[in-house]
Image (cartoon, rainbow, N blue to C red; front, side, top):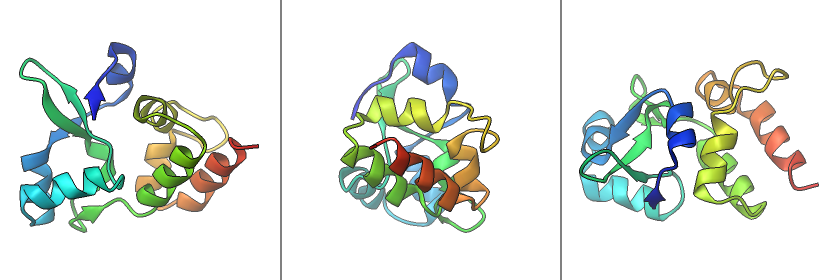
Length: 123
């Protein structure tokens, strides 16, 4: 969990606090903190009070869960040596071949394509 760079902060269209996510998922805040600790979510400090925030695109509010394929994608990127900031930048930078951003593709259940691109980064 690190403070967010202004450039990366601008790439992410919307953020949620950990209590907001807990409410959306129907779990305790401690469970959301555990998801962050386990690497299933990325949380950064931002805003005036430096509270932890997670990109809203990582949460499927309708299904009340973390977006399908996110955890595996984060694991691939981490194994490729990406920092949290680099993962956020990659996930929220438009990719013409997808089209859209990898984060959008994950939320649209196109995780296979995202993971394929993440694996290619290691080569």
